[in-house]
Structure formats: structure tokens, C-alpha cells
Length: 471
Ligand code: BG6
Image 1: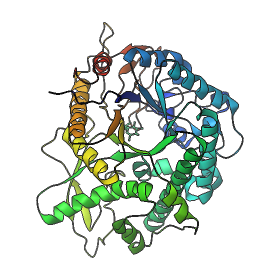
Image 2: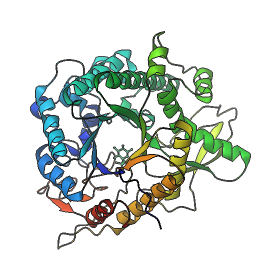
Image 3: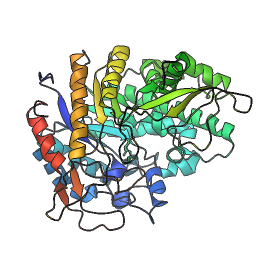
Image 4: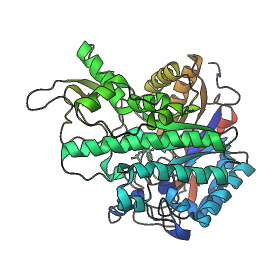
């Protein structure tokens, strides 16, 4: 098999602030929505107070990245470390922390690839005006982004705006969305989504204005939806599920306007957000330089007809917030051709090839994968090893799919799997581990937080050293 990875292909690894840093209130950091939500589960599982304690282990962790041979490290800045209350004074200690991280990465020639917002809105903005519900939040975000560009832009050229806006907006607790009336709730959600689009566009423009050679893009939660059968209605339902959950968001980022089906839905359901006249020019002028995508699994649907009791556009009750069904559109089914992980994700490397082809053919922007990985309850053996062959298999098959996509003609910048070290899973604490490096702690016992390289670390090191030839 030919090795088709370009010479300048970036091999990376990823993380996010609230999942890895800890030090949740140290040196002036404010509380975030992610902290608030994780504290609600503190009696049952790990929370963001210590997480992987990167805040105190950053030197050691970056040394491990160097040992691994990383070209790029994708991580996020905690907005509330830089501006503790979201829109007030800048916290110099927060700037100093990220300066140290960035400089150490650069000393090893590791490119810092920074996400500005990964689920951790400063909680003070929730208290002030319920966060993204207020238009002010978009401008507070732009100001925060400008503080980052001003302080780090001399060294950091690659930026992502929001992590997975398309998924985040569907999860009530991440948006602080507790309205009980279902219609009002969807209206607020659509308004929040719109303000995030506005913030995205303001930030893309600010980056281009402030950072010479700065490159900025979105990070979407990507998937492919397959039709359960070849019935045309099922094919249509699969398209709709994909479009409603991901593509509308990419289209908005790329073209600055909602695609027809989405605009029609918002109008039909009386959910269309409030906008201002100047927005159109802002949204349309913001041109992304690349598309980053997070890819874990695929979905399958069949058509779910609406009826009198279940009008078109109504979500089926009792569904999980991310993969909900919608009357008149789709119903999620299990794909019996795919195996599922211990936590239910349907593993599908071919789907990655499909999605890469789709995005490249549609947007003609270079692509980078900023998350992909397998969450499992790893076991540390008595001789201090983690034999995570299942993770190696998962990564190998996905890397092959990227290679196939490159052979199909897709322009790929790189691959940055989730995650560099074990970190706080957004729902399963430290029971579900994704890291290439094991963190010696459990949910309720911090132990010594020692870093232990897993088998996947050694395997990925070889992959990087051989530019993807040794899989
Ligand atoms: C992605 C998020 O959607 O999925 C990450 O960007 C998250 O923050 C990852 O950790 C895996 O999800 P989970 O729930 O297993 O942690």
C-alpha cells in the first residue's frame, strides 16, 4: 500500500481546558458553565476541579508530547482564566499561564492550535444575561478573542472559534437552557445559536485583521447518516438528520446564511431569531481558512411521519438531547452493520472517508480532524502497563480512512486524535478514558496523578515517525 500522507501532514493530539486543566479557581480564574455542571455530579464522578491537573503538570505533559513527536497540539483556552467574569478585567495570571504553555510547545517545534471556546462559558455571563441568549454575549466573546489574538497572536497562527457549536447548542446544560415550555425553549435555543454564529463571524474577521498569516476555522461535530433502507423517504430522512444536526451549521459558518431547509424550518416553527441589519454584512464577510472536524461515529435513520398528535418539527420525547428523533423527518435506528463501542458509539472508519469527501467537495477548504478516539475503561496492569489494543485498532482504521480520502483527492492538513492524556469525559468522568497517556487517578481517588504511557502512545509514536507508513 502506498504511503500517501503529504510530507507536511500534521500529526497531533487534542484536549480542552475544563477537561484537562484542573486549577479551576486558581490564580483568579472564574467559574464556567462546564465547572458548574461538572460540580453537580461531584459526588458520583470526577469533576473539573482537578481533572488531569495539567495546570500543575504542563511541563511534564508537553515533554511527553515532544517524546511522542507531535507536530501540533490542539487545546483550548479557558475564557474565564483570561477574563474571569467574561466581559470585565483581563487576568494577567491567565495570560501568563498560556504564554508558558505556548512557549514550551514552540521550544519543541509543536504548533499550538487553539480553540477559543470549548463548552466553558464564564458563569458570570449566565448570571448576567443568560449567556448566549443575549446579543451582548457575542460582543463579549469577540473582545475575549481579541485579547487572545493580541497576547498570543505573535506566536499562535492557528485558531478555532467554538468547539462543536452544532452539538453544544443541542445540550441544554451546556447552554444553561432550563425553560420548561418546549416552544419557548426552542426559540431561545435558536437565538443562542444565532448569537454564536455572530460571535464566530466577528472573531474570524478579528483574527484576519489582527494576526498576520493567522488562520481560523470552525470545529464541527461531524457524522454521516445512513438511510435504514433504500426507500426514498428513508434516504431523505437521513439527509435531513445530517443537515439539521451538522450541515446547516457549516453552511452558516461558510456562507453567512441559513440554508433553505433550515430557514424554512425556523420560519415554519416560528423560531427565527432576532437579527440586526448590520449582521448580514458581518456574517457574509467572515471567511474561514479551514474546516476542523471532530469525528467519532455515524448514525442511521428511517423516516418518521408526522400525524395529528405529533406535528412536523416536534421532537420525540425522552430521547437523548444529541441524537433526538423529529416527527416529519427522521428516527434514529441501530446500524446492524457496525459494531458499537462499550459506550454505544457505532464505530465506522468508512464514514470518515465519506464525510471528508463531502466536506472537501462542498466547501473546498483544507480539512483537519481535531478529535477522533475511543473512550474505554482502560486497565492499568500490575506492572504499570495499559494494553489498549482496541484503541490502536480504532485509530489505525481511521488513519487508513484518511489516507483513502487523500487518495480520493481531499486536501487534508492533519489528524489530531482525542486525547493526549486521559481527561474528564464530558459525561462519564474518568471511567471513560481516551488518552494516549494514562492518568493515575479514578473518579473519586486522586491517587498520585502519575502519567503512564499506554501501548497506543508507543504505537502512535511510530506512526508519526514513519509519516503514517507504519500502521
Ligand atoms: C466531543 C467533545 O464531542 O466528544 C469532547 O468535543 C468530548 O469535549 C468528546 O470529550 C467525547 O465525548 P465524551 O462524552 O465521551 O467525553
